[in-house]
Amino acid sequence: MTAEGGIPVVRLDGELDTVRAPELRRDLMAAATNRDAGLVVDLTEATYLDSAAVNVLFELADRLGSRQVKMAIVVAEGGLVERVVTLVDLGSVVQIHRKADAAVAAIRGSA
Image (cartoon, rainbow, N blue to C red; front, side, top):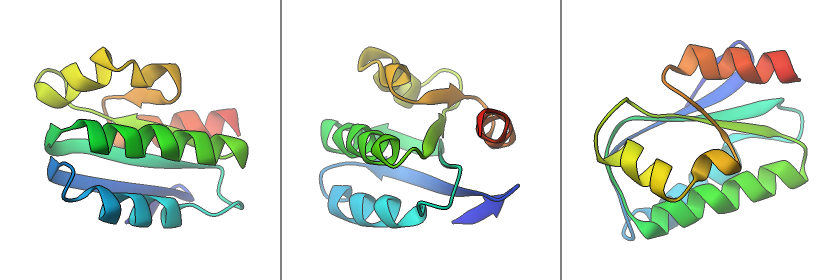
């Protein structure tokens, strides 16, 4: 995890599936505090996203939202991850961007 412009950015790679879901849940839930304006989850290096990982992202968005912490995800254009994000309508609960710096700027602008 890094911080860009004061916003935590978590970069995930590889297959995000049932096996990794407990680790993802733990790490992502701990990535942002109540003092943070938001959290960016960068999925540009992710190659696969299954329903367990999708559920973690929806759960994270819900928990952060209840703490008034914004969330944005970054997905590469084209490919499986973008299709999954679109099919499950993740954009209905989080901002979706193509680049991490744009996601950070959007969160800072809405804080």
